[in-house]
Image 1 (tube, chains in turn red, brown):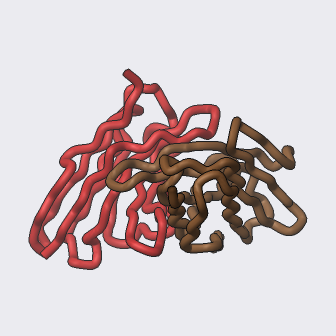
Image 2 (cartoon, chains in turn blue, cyan):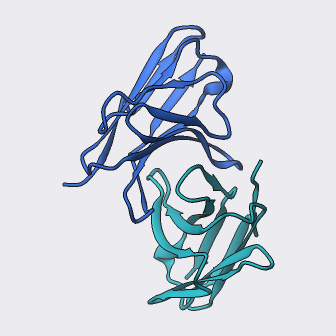
Length: 111
Length: 111
């Protein structure tokens, strides 16, 4: 089954404790992306990657890091999480048709 | 940076009536305009999209129109049903790079 998976689905952590949210897709898509979703603000792009070893900032990259060492995986790293990074995070991948496929989401709470 | 405005933010219609949601974008180089539906607690899913070389596209009860001169595009849902109740997001994209989303419209279809 073609899909995008994210782990963990829920995470509660404390300020400053480094964390990684994994994202994986099995559709051989070159393009992958991370978004955060906050009430009233829609989805805002954090980082995207056009291909392996190629990453670019989206609209809200501050406080986040990504890496793309292999085509299927695109982890999101929060080196020092802060409460304003409490949000719902979605990973997505896109094929040549431009259609984006979203993962199930990761709800992160930073206390 | 690019910006997408979306109106209205909430919309209530009677079952069987039509619903129209409008988005305005700022990047004249944008060439891809998708619409996503997000049901409560679920991931966004693409419902229809349009490219910049097309003025209108229909898929059963859903249609999207694009006015590149005025930089706006609209989602039209006819014969609305209760299962159409969800949050709808528009987005714009420039040659597959970063996606910019509107803030969303909460559609309620009243039986």
